[in-house]
Image (tube, rainbow, N blue to C red; front, top):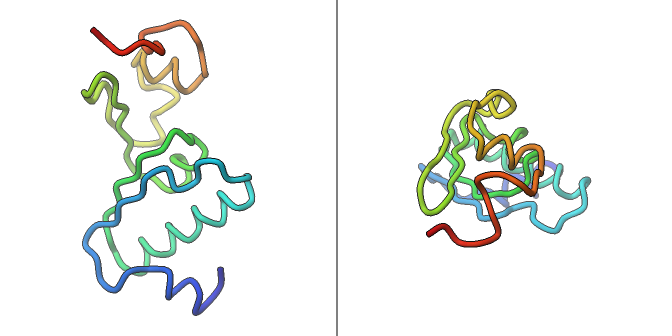
Length: 109
C-alpha cells in the first residue's frame, strides 16, 4: 500500500492498536507488506500495539518487546532482540521449533 491507501488503512487517533495474527496464513511478501503497514501506522499515530502472533519473523520486525504465554501465564517477557538468548526453556523450544520441551500439544495440568 502506498500514500493515501496506507493513510486510509489506519484508524483516526487511537492510543492502542490490537492485532490478532495479522500475518497468519499469508505468503512472505504479503506478510512483509502487512508488517510495513503496521509499522507505518504505529509511527504516524504514535500508538501502542498489542499483537498476538506465532510468526516470529513478523514479531521481530514489528515488536519492541515480546511476551510468551503458556498455560495462561506469561513465562517470559523482554526486548525482541533477546528472544534468541532469553534463557527460557519455553522460548528456546518455540524459537527453534523443537517438539520436546516444556510446551506440549496437551493443555497444562
